[in-house]
Amino acid sequence: MSDTRSQQPDSTAFVDFITSGWAPRADLGVTRSAVADLTPARRSALSARFPGTRLVVPAGGLVRRSNDTDYRFRPHSAFAHLTGLGTDREPDAVLVLSPRTAPDGSWDGHDAVLHVRPLAPRDTTEFYADSRYGEFWVGARPTLEDVAALTGIATAHVDDLADALAKDVGADGVRLLVVAGADESVETLVGSIRAAAGLDATQSETTGSEALLTDADLATAVSELRLVKDAYEVEQMRAAVAATIEGFADVVRALPRAAASPRGERVVETTFDAHARLVGNTVGYETIAAAGEHATTLHWIRNDGEVRHGELVLVDAGVEVESLYTADLTRTLPVDGAFTDVQRKIYTAVLDAADAAFLAARPGNRFRDVHAAAMEVIAARLEEWGLLPGTAAESLAHDGQFHRRWMVHGTSHHLGLDVHDCAQARRELYLDGVIEPGMVFTIEPGLYFKSDDLTVPQEYRGIGVRIEDDVLVTADGNENLSAALPRRPQDVEAWMADLLG
Image 1: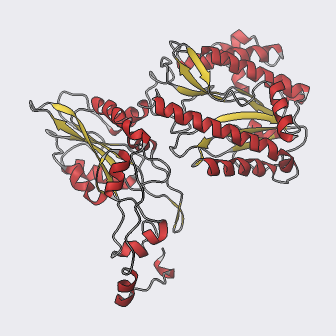
Image 2: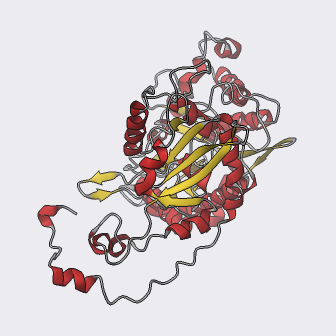
Image 3: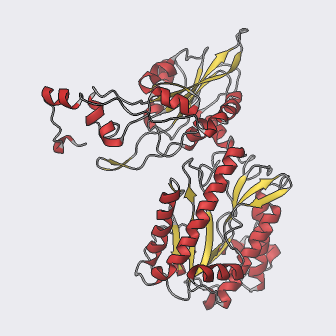
């Protein structure tokens, strides 16, 4: 709260009065979470890559939106993955994995401690006067014991973090790495500790024969941990997809209202976003509600345009469930419930490309093969329509790529705690990586013909189509997690007719 407008009384009599006369706090009813039994394996996998190194994984702090108001808190995805904490829990918390030694002096894994800001006693000014953390303002925070019970991880006060990080750090002792980009204040603290120990500003050591380990290596490692999902994560992805499909049905029901509004795209956006807040945590990313020509702008999130009869509306949206896993689905819908001939032609080409990509999304193939399969279909259709300055084969060659004028994005990305999950993974494990069972990623080809594109027929201009599904790789192929959301044009039309009555 700004001091210039504070009217908080500060007399001794007031302080004595407001901090007394309270019944014992009700038990928050915290029990061990379902994911608490799975996070030790995740931490062990990370531990194996960094023997002798103290690993610092911040949740992040509250982020200022404007003046003295903050955005709703969401923890860093690496922190959520390694602790199991989701929704808006524990701003400023830090997970610390400290190396331990075996009797013979060798490194023997890590001990995890979760540093949090616990519930303040009622005789403190934080209780009633702190607008960021005080119980009067944001509700009762869990105690250290509550957090330990929930996560299965030992806890300590965040005020003890500096001493915990500095212990035994040095060129001949413990090394220190931090996940950068999560919490600037923690990064500054780590930097000062490393400087005091004579270590490089971004590296865990500066001498010795071992390859230097950097903060970037840690960021890569926590990202790669999520390339293959465990059973809990798959369950959460299924829940996110199911909730998202329900949200798309709500959008269809709202289309008549959208078409009657001067800001129909906002009707689509707010319909889905309200659903996401009601059934989950929030949306996994800003909803794209792109009608008509706006659908040719890949990340159209202004959503301030009209939804016109006879046109298409591209809806790219996902529900983020309480565990922070998100779906990412796109459907391109005819506003009036039926495709025109030209719309159907373009839509079918995109659907055929998606089907080809599904065939390539299987164990043993490489991730890049999924995109290649979709591009073969896109290039072939564009050749059939006479839009390429040559053949499809010439366009698919490295020095061609003419078809990419109408689909400049990739066909797939990993999905999970982040909508673009595992983004810091090494190229050899991501784009060039081998597809494995347990991976979850999108398949989302598209065609986008801008209204001022003079290289295409007039009837194509202003049409953008994308079809996006979420796929789980299985032992012998894949499963379309979003198969319940109609894809074929005739199925889309029948589904919309049923919803619109």
